[in-house]
Image 1 (spheres, rainbow over the protein chains, first blue to last red):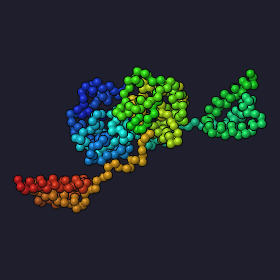
Image 2 (tube, rainbow over the protein chains, first blue to last red; image 1 turned 90 degrees about the vertical axis):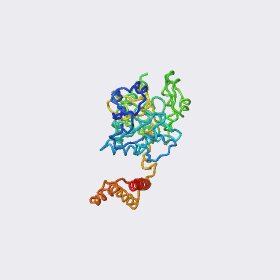
Image 3 (cartoon, helix red, strand yellow; image 1 turned 30 degrees about the vertical axis):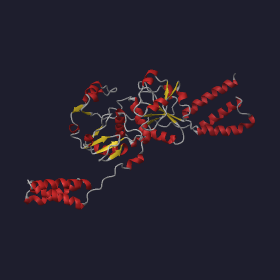
Image 4 (cartoon, one colour; image 1 turned 60 degrees about the vertical axis):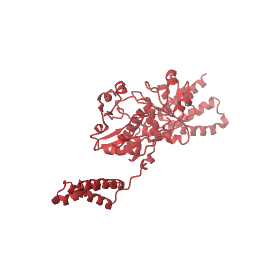
Length: 215
Length: 215
C-alpha cells in the first residue's frame, strides 16, 4: 500500500492475533498504525461512493458485473478524480462472502491462469494497487537517455585498427584481407556501439596491437 | 509464477535452509520441485538472449539503461515472441550485485513512490509477471454482459404504481402530485434500472400498495 501511495487501510473483523503480530515492510509501519478497525463492512465503507470487491471467481454465481483488473482499475481511477472508493479484499482462505459482495457496485479480478482459483493476498493487493497507479503516459519516457552512437569516423578508425590487429595477429591473411575488411566493417556497424564504448575498444585494440609489435 | 504461467524458476546460490523449507502456494508446488539451482549467474542464464535485471534504484550509479516496468515489459514481450529471456531478481535485502547487473542488457523498475527503495520480493515478482501477461486488448471485453435496461413502458408502469403508493401512503398530497410525478419520473430514469430489477421493484411496490389498501 505504501509503495503505491494508498494509505488508508480499514480492517473489518480483523483476526486479533494475526493483526497484533503483523509486521509491516520497511518504512510502512505507519499504515498499520493508522489502520482503522470496524465491526461491520457497512461502517468501514460508509462514505465511499464506489465499492469494488475483488474475487478469484471460483464457481460462485455472480449477480453483479465482473471486470478484469485492466478495465476495473480504469473505472476506479475515473471515480477517484472526484470521490472516494473502497477496494475490498476478503480473507486469503475464503475471499469475500456473498454478504460482503452485496455491498459492492461491481467485482474485479486479476487475470490469473484458470488453474488457479486463489492468490496470495499480499501479492493480489500489490498487483491491484500497481495497476491503479500504472501510468501509460510514462511508458514512452525513457529514464536513461540513449547514449550517442559512435560516428562513422570513429567506427572506421576502430575497424581499421581492428583489421590491422587481425592481420598482424595472423588471423587474416594478406590475400583475404579485403573481404575480411568488409566483414569487419559490417560487424562493427551491427554492434551499434555508443561513442564512448568505441573509444574504449579503440584503446584496448591499440594496446594489444602495440604488444604484438613489441613482444 | 504459476498464476501467470511462468514455470521456469532458476536459483543462483540459493540459501539452502530457506530453499529447503520453502512452501509454495496451492497448486504451485511443481514450480519449486522443477526449479534448477546453479552456482553462477552465467550458467543460469546461458541460453537466454535477453537478460533483464530488476532494481529498486537506490543510489547506485547506473551504466545501463533503466526502464519503467510498463516499458520494459513491452520490450520483453516482443523478445519472447522469438527467443528466451531471463528476468533477474536479487535477494530481498541487497538486490542484485554490480556483478549480477553486468550480465544484464538493461534494468527495469517497478514505479513505486520515491520514499521506498525496496519492495517485498514476492510482490515485486508478482507485479512484474502480471505486467508481462497484462492484456490491453482484453480491456474492452466485458466479462459480464450489461443487463438490458428497462423499457420506457416498464419504467412508466413502475412510476405510476410508485406515485399511487406515495399518494395513498400520504407522502404526496393531491395538490402537489403533479410536480411529484415529474420528480419521480426523472428519478426513475436516473436509476438506469435493468429490466429485471424494474419488474422486481414493481412487484414490491404493488404488494405494499395492496397492504395500504387492505390494512
